[in-house]
Image (cartoon, rainbow, N blue to C red; front, top):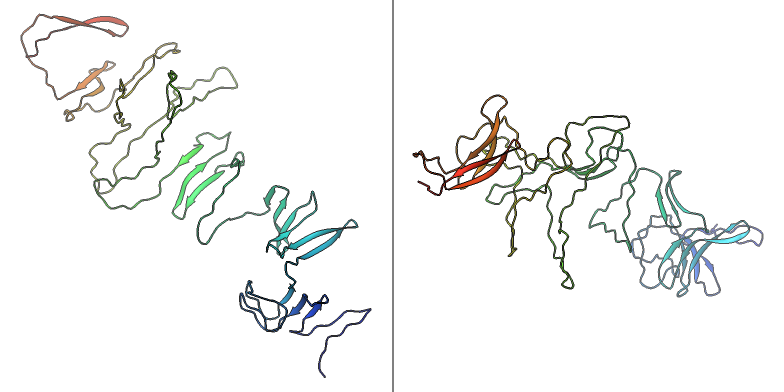
Length: 366
């Protein structure tokens, strides 16, 4: 006995494998269960189900195919929501676009193994589980029309991590009641590079830009490339004493295994380029506000006094000449000349410990 399609006005119908059920007077719509697997971009052996140059994924044997071969005809799935039809799926035959739809105020959800993974409401894509976004090839590009806004979780040790397979490179700590944290932390990972004259690795680097002014109105406000605003340190009970606060602390590099490091420098200021009227390596404003001292430059004593001059350079340092007697030291390639007493021809007034003194000078240099 051969199984044949059966159709009854009051009951279901039965379609064997590879026998399509046709919809429409021109048989443009069809549904069929394929007996055999179907390669990608290939029409099945069942005639009339698909047409033209097929574009599609490979299908396993036993797959069900729903098709509409009427030119520019759509495929839609509707549900009844409170007595009104609501489109849930739409495939646009004229453009090739597909859409999953939800009613106003509702969301499109994605479930895996009965667990909600994604909830997409109007303008809000909410992942419901810990999520990894990745690509197996190429880049991921985010290009907003207006702005890219990222809201981090408050009071988290690593609210934002930028890492590679080698480890962490950047971290944001949003904890606000924990001592000793670093809010923005940049890190190196271990590097292996060939030695050479320019074999260096910089932790942070910026690339300058050209700022073009229009007009000739003089700019009297100082142009600042990097501006660090000050923090305010406050207490909840009178009176807390904080011994020292610094805007920036610099620690120079140190040598590791098999390296002889000649100079290590905490801060190196390069000369300006172009033709400015004045070039200053360091400009320190007048200090004010200190109730005891207002000093523009302080050098701590207690280091090892330099034994030799640095070639083509002059060094300043603080040195203890006795207990409680720190004073200014100068290391120069110029030696002190022993000479008979000379009459001074000039005087330089300086302030030492709040008292004015005249340093007697002469133009005789030998």
